[in-house]
Image 1 (cartoon, one colour):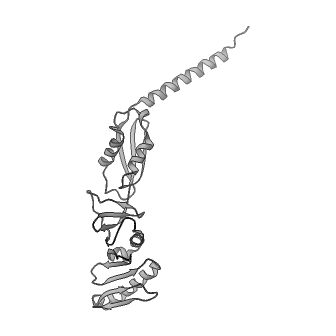
Image 2 (cartoon, helix red, strand yellow):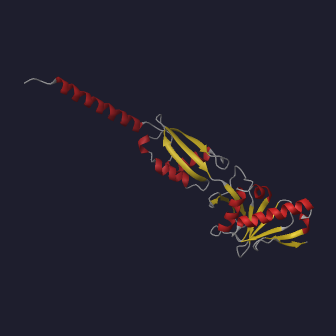
Image 3 (cartoon, helix red, strand yellow):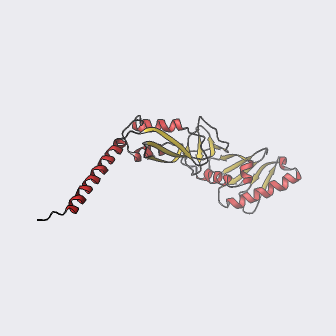
Length: 239
């Protein structure tokens, strides 16, 4: 019987390849994780530090440095970071050399609640705690505010971030007990009464027209209240 050496060689080669693959996979899995590398993405990277992120990783998995790669649960680490109220999104992954990488996107504050509790409202309308590292220059929110009734305030705060006039002039958003919205403007004595946020764009346009007219006439100081609640009207109360 003639032996087919080509088949034997092929079988040995496949066995060797399989062995080397298994060896490499086992070696890679047992390779230890190096010092975590934290990278912040996006524009707002002022409120939480890389040291804080590293501590979050350690708190939820222990000392991640010098831990075998096969013992890490990357999804668990990601979820731990995302649960932090300063963090909007996070991605955790391992490099080939064993470096643990964490890409973190911080939340963006757009208003600061200043009542019996102090915290930020972020760009998604969610709670964000104050930071010991940086204080954002955003409008204050006062009045009857709870975390479960931020809808009207958030709508106005979000509008402010997209409007140059409002961003320059609005320093405070006040919500009354019946959830009516008032604005305070920089260097103005009068209070702007928006009411609710229906027809908000029209109300803001009316405010701009009133402001520019009275700025030109040097009469802004003559008013104590500017009421924008009524359709196509600006009702002013003089001092």
